[in-house]
Image (cartoon, rainbow, N blue to C red; front, side, top):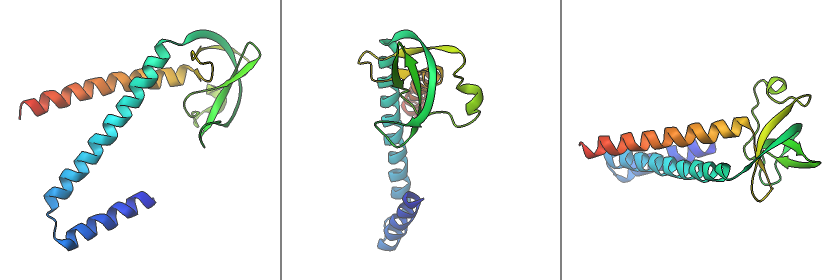
Length: 145
């Protein structure tokens, strides 16, 4: 919420100073493109890490705070060791998605610090594919202008 307020104050100050609205639109578009590129790089990074992970059978253990961030993540038990998931847990249908009574297949990262469960695999794969498709479409559209 504070981010939106800061952006609004910056826009108002720019308009008071006399900057044309078209430059503000270009700046906004540039910010959106930068965020898009950074998220695409992040998804590509995790997709590549996922490709080199080892498939393991695991059991869901618990949902708790991540050791590296403030998000809550799912923890999985593999051979007596507990590993956090790489992405935050899915808040909806938590009891249906994370079941400790059944084994599941996860991908254990090479450094053995985290796992990719089926939801993080789907996030990486779909995000990677959609990112490549939209980047290609943007390049085609911009080259035809």
